[in-house]
Image 1 (cartoon, one colour):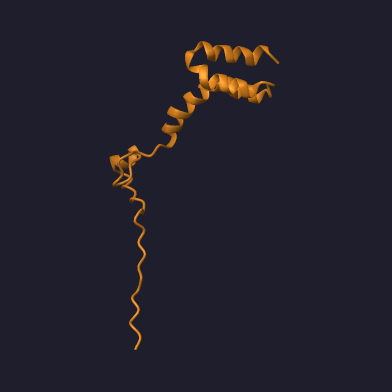
Image 2: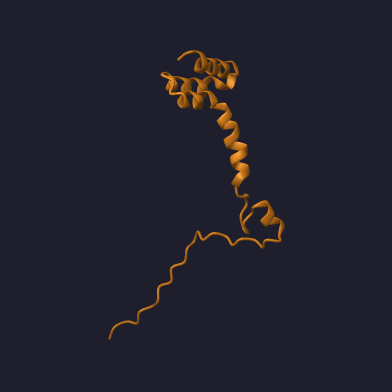
Length: 98
């Protein structure tokens, strides 16, 4: 006699939380029900991506112009751009040295 087979049920332990109702405040703020953090969405792109792009703007411009020292400008901007003077120096180097 063979033992009876049991049905195996697989449940996803990390299933996403359900979306809130469209009329709720949580929906307008971007929260999921049961979530502690809002979704990043466009605000995350604006608040993080915008300043980061401005910070690395000399390097982005050097790559766009195919500057011969673009890797050095990227390194210079990343390491010394926070001083302000380093950012301006990198920007001037992108524009005057070709």
